Image (cartoon, rainbow, N blue to C red; front, side, top):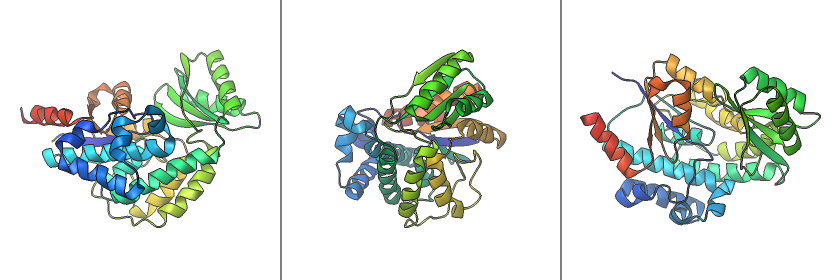
Length: 312
């Protein structure tokens, strides 16, 4: 029997209109949107379907919006298809989606926590002070070395080890700029500045992690029904007791996504489903190992099409 993994996207996957077909076609999806609206005191449907983009792009809106759409997709999938994954994982914010889908966190608790997480991450560093950039075409060891060289008393850290040859760096704007320059000189194929509002997953985010801890300590963590792979280690959680600590550490630690994909392969995962907006993770899996044949499921129609393919 094929072993599947379900994966959930992080920030950057948002688009105005996301989740609309799920909402229009499924009572289960509507219930997710309504719960998010009630918990946060905002109209999640309007935020996701109408934006405007600038509002949706604000970190404290983006994070709960992506979580909502991802869990709506998961609930629609679950009521239409009885396919149990062997593992779950999510990229950064997506780890919350994976933990909700695994049963460890209640959706209402998670959507409240990620709203706060987004706010704390935004407030940790004054706007314009930080930056992020993707460095393409250099080995990870080289990027780590470049960050050390470029810091010059400021912070620049590897933030995401996304796939072989794709590392995102994060920190003070000047240090990120210097790291980009050194990367070009070292033969990087491309350095792409990212349109983000804060230097996520750098040590500058530690104050945000500390504030998030006070929120997460009030949350009841339940038993996972499916093992979840943690961003901080790139390996499955060993117990529910680790969840709060790992989610706090994750805010200021690199996302070990390449390691997470390698772990899934080593654990026997053969196929991958990406639930939620965008296709970013599917692209990373394809680059890492084509045999995963990732399937992004964003809309109600995507899920029905996938069910037909399974049944044929």
